[in-house]
Length: 153
Image (cartoon, rainbow, N blue to C red):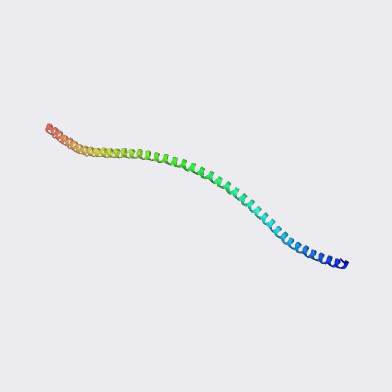
């Protein structure tokens, strides 16, 4: 091979190599951009996953707290229901006692009315006896006065 052909072949080889290198470099820079985007996306996904995990943990804690609150409220409701049942029983007993007391009161009222009627009747009789007694006393006084007058004569 002649040195000139060798130089041209060498030049063509260097140009071809340069073209291949430039093409690889351009391809690699595109891949590097894609790789950078992929890393960024992986980081975003990882951050999103961590945020969602933290949110899930927070929600689980909230659910646990709500369950505890519901259990506490259920116990309180049961306690209040028991108290309400006792209060209902007490109210029923009180109502029964009140009914008995009202019945007794009605009996007392009837007794008082009957007593008042007896007193009214006795007052009428007393007024009649008083009038009769006064009449008898007046008659006795008249008879006594007539006897005195007759004895004086």
